[in-house]
Length: 160
Image (cartoon, rainbow, N blue to C red; front, side, top):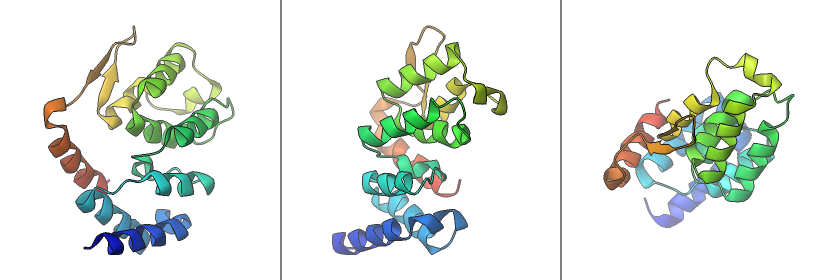
């Protein structure tokens, strides 16, 4: 696939993002591009956020810090109804800001915590990382093999 064809498909995904949860052609196109062309999902993440779409979480794989911050703002609303999906989206970000937020939520659960089956720290595993009760982070895969691991993981995520 040429870069122009990939870009055309990305634009199609963005313009039809509200149908991605229906597992139709848009979802198949997204999975194919992510798994086999390792596309940057930043624009797709913004489009999904703008439409209030938080599933599948891999839409947020390359979300910009601004989108991450918007996700966190929604998550820290005590009346949040989509905490499960937001935690998965944020786990894929996995930066220091997300880690600090997850640790804060572990220590000071919000009202929506009772609706989850696991603590926020367990969601970090979806993003390939973990932290202990003191906030010390560790990776769940070998960083040296990250490129190959990410490709394999993305292909597995495509079937999630």
